[in-house]
Each structure stands twice: as C-alpha cells, then as structure tokens.
Image (cartoon, rainbow, N blue to C red):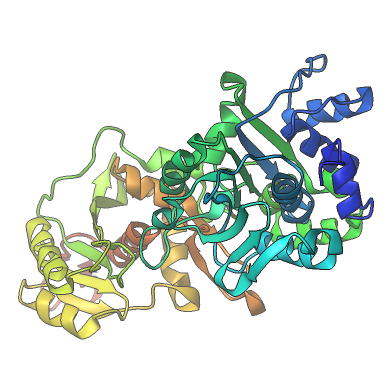
Length: 487
C-alpha cells in the first residue's frame, strides 16, 4: 500500500476524514513530514516552543504524546501509527524472519490492539493482507512478514522480539501488577533493546499523572533532549467535537486539579485530588531528622499488613510538648517490601514489628483485619496490644480527618522520611458512589506507610488533651467547698 505518500492522506483514508488538524500535525511531525504555515503554528502549541521557533522535519526514534482524555490518542494517533508502520512503510524482511509491532497497555484487551484489529477487519484492502488472525492470542500475522502483537505490560514479556515499533498506551499508569513486575521504568529497559536492530521507534501515549516518572521527566526536560519528540495537548485541541457543557460538568464533578490533569493535560503534583496540603506537610517535616528517639513516651503504633504484592508498614507516634505546644510526633516509620515470588513471611514481619514496638516503648497498636488473629498473638508475645480498626473507606474517616486537622493546625511533627512524606503527598480524596468517604494513594501509588502513620497519629491524638501525668491536690476532708482535682 505504498501509494500513500503522506501519513495525512493515509489517516484521512482510514478515518473518513474524521481527523482533527491537531491530530494530523502530531502524525506528520512524528513521521518527519513537512508542515504548512498554519500547521507550524499548531506544532508550536503542541511542542510548547517559542513563538517563532523553526520546524525542521526529522525522524524521531522516541516520542512522547501527552493528551487529555477523549482526545483520540488511542484511535487517531496510536492506531494510525501502527497501521502506517505495518502496511505502508517498507521494511526489508529476511527469509525466515518476522518483524514485530508491539502494542502495550496497562492491562490486556485494552484499547490500541483491539482498535487496530477492528480497523483492519473493517477495511477489505487491509484485511486481505492478513496471513493469520490469532487475536485471541494477541497476534495478527501479516503477509509482509510483520506481526502485530498485543503484549502484557510486563517487562519479561517484552524481551526477545525484533521490533520496528513499540507503542505503550496510558504509559503514565503502568505500575506494579499482582506479580510485582509491571512498571514503566523496567518495561522501557526491556523494550529499547528490541528496537535497536531495525532502528525501530518507540511511541508513548498517555494522559498525564503526577509529577514523577519517565513521562513527566521527558516533558520537564524536553528542551534539553531534542532527540525525543514531546507533544502535549488538551482534549479540546485534539478533539474539537467535545461538548463544552460536558467539560464544565466534569470540572464541577472532579474539581479543578482533576480537570486540569484529565482534560487540560497538565501534570499535577499528584495524579488525583490531594487529600493533604503539601505546604502543611513541608512545615511538619523536621528536615535532617529521619527518626525521633524514644524518651519514655506513651507510644501508639499503627500497622498496615499486606497481601502478596503490597508493602507492610509500621509507624509510631506519641504526644510531646514542642515549643510550649502539645503536638503529636511521629517517631519513626518502617516498610517491609515483599519478595517478588513469595510475598511476605507474615510471622517474620510481625515478629520484627513487635521488636520495633518494644524498642520505642509502644504497648498498643492498631491495624486492619489482615492476619488479625496472628497479629494479636505475635504482638502480645512482645507486650503489645493489637486493636482491629477499619483503615479504608467510611470507617477510616475519623482517623484521616484527625490527621488532616492536626497537620493543618501545625500540631503534627513528621520525621524526614522520604517514603513517608511522598506517600502522604500522594494521598487522594476519591469520588465514590453516594459520596462515601475514601482516601487512598493515587493511581498506582503506594500508601502503606501513610496508612500506618495515619493510624498511629489518630491513636496518639486520643491523649493529646490530657496531661502526661494527672496531678491531684488534696485538701482537708472537712473543706467540702474547695475539693479539687486538677487534670
């Protein structure tokens, strides 16, 4: 099908001209084609360049497209790129060799591969070039020696292929799967060698997440790395047919941070609606102090026990007077990482938690129902009581609001523990059916140590208004009017 001289004419043929000017510009820039004067103005917006920046057509081996939702990134951009590479570009294939186009998504059977298959089946000129249709196995073999493959976003499955194109959809949201192996950083390390032999291209597409990870870094450093094409566009620029009233309804429903991230394609500090104020967290952290030493305090502990893939966490807190004000001080926080194959040795983790509680002088702890009976037994052997509480959903509302109130009132002191601070920053208030209370880590973000910390702080806060040691003043038993008890 080499009669298509431009990816623009190919895209218009594929989608019956239902392609926006901005989508055409993205495809042409990605393919190294010349732009018209009007298209160059659009390119400057997408590339976030200076007003009079010059456009020079070139081939990019690596591209990052950051789009708002409903912008056509999976259909008009990713699918078109795959079909252009598979059917229009010429790729010499040696006898007995097969070349691959790899399509990755957060989960199998999502988005791009299925869209590509549906489009091929709907166009006779494309479908007649299919050698075998093994879609149920994630494979479409073409007569020209190219295989379009749907691959789980697991780094170990990306190895051993000779690829001419790798497309990673929703790349900002590839995180640990149940085998603890699915994440973008490791995936890229596995994919890039597959592209070396045939000088294949890598295309990452996603709506933005928080200000972290390879996509955020590519966008932040785009001026420093001209060999990577980075384009960013809000939903309405790429898809002008979106109803403005629907967008405004989404803004009201999800809030300003949600709207900026999901529809304006802006990287926000977290990938959702932050539950805690980042400035207040910064004020609470004692920089340079990773742990506060116990000093005979009445310590409360919070536990977050985990299944196979999550971390286990423990935090300790107590009440201390700081600059004349009684505050809750988080003494320390600790995390246990699971073994990738075997998960946690729960008894070992609980014993180590019990020893850590004894180290700081804690005699009481709280946690959720996971391994509850075992936790009670093991911790009791270390002189620590265990109380089961709800750590997620409506039942956790009081603990989280207590933590937030103390933080905002500057009555909370935090150690300079990077993992704890990061997880607290990433806690998000989620919208649920019936507006039920829910706070948890953002998409793909861990929250285990934050959960343990919240429970420890809420437990310790129950003693915040009480004096450390009750003081009694005894008067003459016959002086009934002046009996006093000073608390």
